[in-house]
Image (cartoon, rainbow, N blue to C red):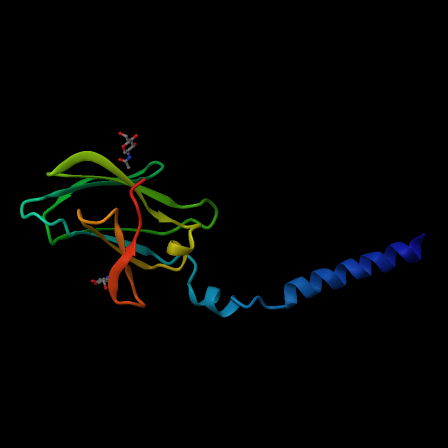
Length: 149
Ligand SMILES: *[C@@H]1O[C@H](CO)[C@@H](O)[C@H](O)[C@H]1NC(C)=O
Ligand SMILES: *[C@@H]1O[C@H](CO)[C@@H](O)[C@H](O)[C@H]1NC(C)=O
């Protein structure tokens, strides 16, 4: 029946129009993050002992950022543009003089709320806590800590 089918396609159109027109509550927030904006990841060697150099190796698939060794109190930074097609996930391995076993950490995961809105993601590596600690703008301190893994 032609009239019933055109009625149902009109209804479908109405539903689609409603979905497209109704703005999501996050609309402004999402729009405030420019697409293709670069992300900075900074890693600070905050290990206790002097001379405790930190060796860092980060990569995302074929994007290998190489091996870098930084002295206590200094930082290593890398930049990238998150993909809007693939999920951008940077993995890092950390070793240091007093603990040369590999400590693995996912320093950036585009699908994690922790990282999704982060444009300047700054981390401290300490040896007296369970794992890396991220800078928290709300507290103004590096107290957002996560276990190695
Ligand atoms: C980290 O170490 C593991 C085990 O040796 C290795 O398979 C992995 O590719 C390393 N990842 C990075 C980013 O160096
Ligand atoms: C990122 O934030 C850290 C900690 O507040 C600051 O030291 C650094 O200069 C910032 N970097 C950029 C590129 O804004």
